Length: 243
Image (tube, rainbow, N blue to C red; front, top):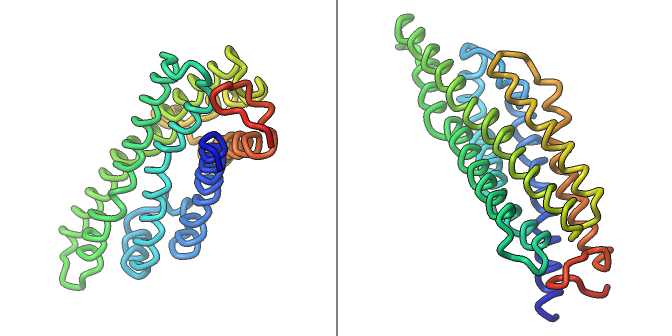
């Protein structure tokens, strides 16, 4: 297998793995704690659940953490495909910077469920815990969710991811290194992802988030399928190969 085909197939595998990986935390956490709907539940509901379903919660959020970290290689692979004969494209470099920001912020948001929340759950559910301490734990739970949730979901999943997709899609539309409809779809996806910022106002966009995040996953899937089945559509001298 030559170098061009090796990159092509590696890129497809990575994109498909990332596309499918989100179903692992959705399945595991959904069955254990009714995630992601449980994110809006109070401490009195979530903390006992976190303790009762500790193994599933840790596994589910760990897989979600892996998924979030993989945003980085996904972004770099897409950037390499889109760059073509111009790997120094400034806008793509900026896009990769936004992708780094998205991944880091996602991780910071997820960490709360793997480290501090289990500790709070143990204190909250301990029979020896006083009402005053339990009230303090509830305040801490609300603060962690408000702060880390804004970092992870609003900034990581929404704002920085939208900037990454928008910048990359602009290059696709301008350079045509992938079919331009991929770039147009990416721009629509970026606008949809920006809707997460409305939570700062605050406006409940929970139902809308059920649409815009899958749009991002289908952007990855479309790119993977084009690279796999239509390499001739890649107007990219550095990577285009015959099937």
